[in-house]
Figure (cartoon, rainbow, N blue to C red):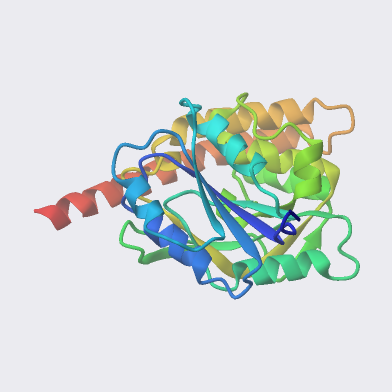
Length: 284
């Protein structure tokens, strides 16, 4: 029996108790204008009804896999991407959403002549409330452009934040994933940025200014509850990267990034508190 050809894109959702928003995440994949994809959902032992939601879909492009034992966040992310068969991979958190043209735009960018050196394509993203209402749009650049990998690393270090974006914003090649060791447990609170920096050591970044995904801020949002820890680990990751023999990061870059990372952690904490207070007021 002949095996089906691999899909163009594997969208990978590592699931754990995502019952509130997993349907929106799945629907956003089903709505893609590019249809040559597979959706892989690896469940790390959800107990909140997430499984029933996932299993309500009959689309053959959706694969649900229950982990044989609890793997934790990093392990679940790695298993999910490893299960993919697509030429390109995207990890989508279970409470985030893709815009309908996300996959088409990003795959097209990879295929453009002259972009052979690109190791990741990312975009602006909308920050949305628990109800999906846009709070703000986060942009790094003002126009679509290719950014040399080492230059992007330096700019990220100076900015004090993850300019590449959350996992849903990024598409990368399966060949690069297979040549690397996946997501690392070294810096669990900046797990995505750690991997993006590794990709940028291998190639360049292409940035699209149109927002192509939504990153949800909620009381359950793991990353927004960890502002101070994220800032410390960002500083540790950048410091480690700066010590590499051919690193583009200077001591001044590290100092500037340190100041901005601490300021950013405070801002994220204030936004998180604001979102929690809005939720409390709504329930009263």
